[in-house]
Image 1: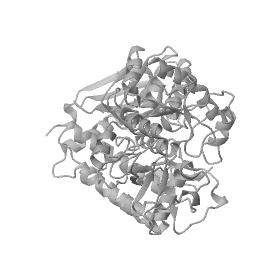
Image 2: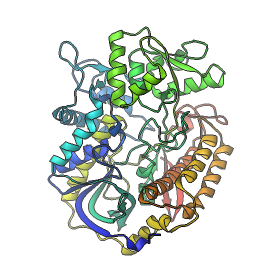
Image 3: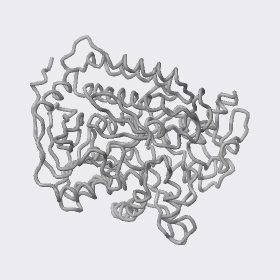
Image 4: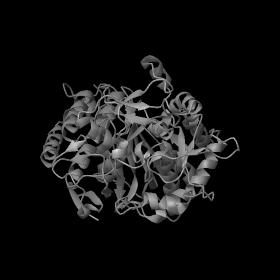
Length: 548
């Protein structure tokens, strides 16, 4: 049995520390390095394959102000800004300004964007947007490796396989982080002038789809809510955990992205009676907001009109279908063609059966216009969603973090006692015998969340969920690990549990339906009383909530 004090300790200093090396972390690395500072990127995975982008992507969203109707900054701001979005106009405008330099980077590394016969960009409409903002990518499965090469060539310091478990503070500002190497157990203390959180907006493995495999998910299964848990523990305010929960439709028994392309090509969703039904739920039908498609599909299901559900593309352009199935879909997940062969899926000849995905938990750190959170020196690199939103968020946040670092004298000190306690906590599962493995621990969390926090919820059920999640928390000290891989999983499970607790506690406060992808059976109607943002944070270890 290994002892915590047997592990080597390394201390590193840098100017800007970026946590996460997915799309947001890559954008952040580029932005911070442009300011000429020491930049360190770390991730519990490897830069070349980490994050959702590691699985590929078939589109990048961009507004180009080309003169076309709705291809304008104003249209983009109008679409994304709202009283409960958490975004200011200035933040969204910065996203648009970051799109061209990020597109330049992607073209420089050889990302192949689709062109029309006249040489203009091929751009499509998706998910209720008023403009054709999605730029289609042919070689999306190669993006992450090529971005990694770009970042390493810039001289950015990279630490692969480091899981961060705690943010360190001094005088209410960020001082650094604590983490460990998930392959050899080396314990790391990293001091920094500024930290950019770029660990992903979503927390997966909360529920499971029909495969029964919690790792076969729509987005990366390794996002377990660290973006929120680390910030919450450091005293940052979180918002919209009650609203920004996500789901999609998946090819039956196969967790992958791709509904944007399927809807955009003109697919019709059919219920078990063969009826095209989405017109009842949004005037843009299948091309309406993703949330409406989820709510509509679920409503048809509880009315007994499904499953099965199918996406029928037989009426669509044959060349577009071939491009979608054999180029774009594998760009999102490389094994899609294997799945299609085994299931006999052919977009041109047979409707493809689809199902509701697992539910992802999400939210946002309360963020100022300079992308700094409510904790000094901590910046939010995951303000926006999608490949474009992530990469641009990271770029903006790290640029601001780097500028602030240039005005900061010296590195803040770290509290040795806090570091010591966290070191002991990290490695405790390796010193525990006859305890609980991460699989059993996580399965208990998923069982509670699936039963009480599914697509239909109510107050009593959520109170029960929180009670049972708190009971599971009482057994955190019994988690055991026999190797470093299992130790990583155990620490992920703790973050997953805390994210579920925060999301459940927040959702209980929003006593209405119609804004999120779930419905409340006890409050089935939308209410103007909740046209507000809910914030959650902690004081002296207890959650505090407030409507903003």
